[in-house]
Image 1 (tube, rainbow, N blue to C red):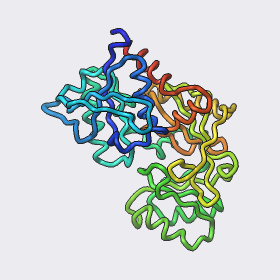
Image 2 (image 1 turned 30 degrees about the horizontal axis):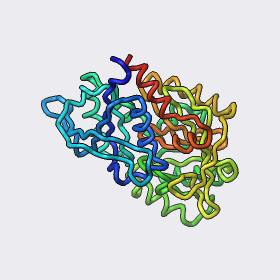
Image 3 (image 1 turned 90 degrees about the vertical axis):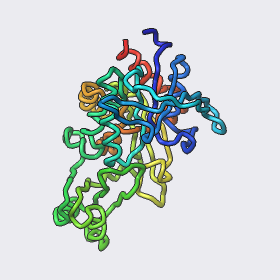
Image 4 (image 1 turned 30 degrees about the vertical axis):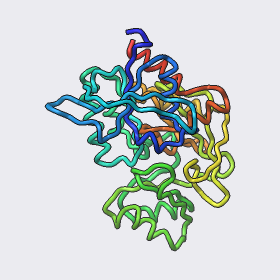
Length: 319
């Protein structure tokens, strides 16, 4: 099928609520539009299964690079999701049971012929914090546990640690603790719900203060040549733009490329076409597969558009 004929459905949060100047999903849609591809829009409440067939109430959508008027929606119609050439799954976390159910629906669309980006099974298998365990040589010391006494021991061993839940995004519920901190017990109780939920504790990497938390984007396993380093505000520990961090662009260094070479092939093999590595001080802290961001900031600074590279990858896969 000629590239200009591709039909692409986008499953996302409400389009009226995005921040268009920085939204990577909108950038993907604009890249598809520039190729003449036809776009449809869906939210989670507009997809379902009937007798094993994935269906959706898809609305045609026109998008514009205008921060005051960035979309127009047409009338919805029920369609088989497997009839789309590609489906972009761009629903933001939390990665809860509703998200998991959505991946089952999208997996039925995949079985019927659609290319789902990122692949539903990979979305289920690759928790963004836990999947770092598949590449321990790329990561700082990390503990994933429910056991609060083990968390205390880890904190004593390393002196300073970052503690966070396994399902969040955007810097939510991230704590930095030092050994002897009187708040450590209540933080561990909160994150694990008194030992009933798993949480992650990582050795604190002080480089975040000077060089930031760098977002390295991988497209079909290959790194975009520039990263977005997010420098925490002076009053915060978190390298997240949503938490007030400053975004600073930089070229990839040798360590970034080594990390990408270790992790990228596994992602490509499992159908994860658009992934964001979070890198602090040369260590991967998260492998973001659900709805990675940062593409618009990198494109503005360096003229390299990761979303155009993604459209190239989708066209290759469909060909």
